[in-house]
Amino acid sequence: MENQEKVLVTQTGYEQLKDELHHLVHEERNIVIQELQEARAQGDLSENADYDAARDHQARVEARITELEGMLANIEIIDDTKTKKKTVSLGSTVTILDLDSNTEETYTIVGSVEADPFSGKLSNVTPLAAALLDSKVGATVTVTNVENPYKVKILSLS
Image 1 (cartoon, rainbow, N blue to C red):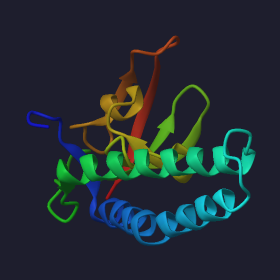
Image 2: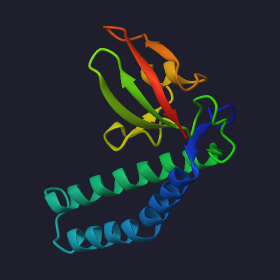
Image 3: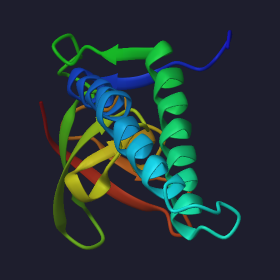
Image 4: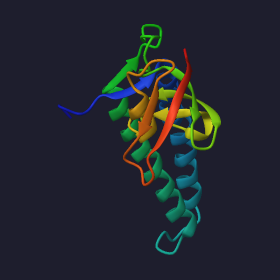
């Protein structure tokens, strides 16, 4: 697993990943074991839908555990206390004005693992975030790498 790309997350995102891994290892695995035991108790496994479902559940849980362990082994925490508040960077919260629609939006720029645009968390690799990075309050930037490029103005930054 050497030379894997760093997984960028905030401290909050790191804690959420650790909590999810702990839950899967210490709680969900026990649920899967119980499901498998109950399905085996039903007898013939060759035509046992409950057993198949339990094995599928087990596979999904184990795959996610492996994925989380890989992520956590390559984590780089975005120190948002040190982010340059004069320019947009990972960990910054930025309020923008879409100059086409005249609407304001506020986003926090995070690593792709934490991204959740519906909660205002925008991955640093999205076209909008990429356009905003290293820009200052008051700057107008053009969002490219989209079907219809558009301009936004940075209103505030924290």
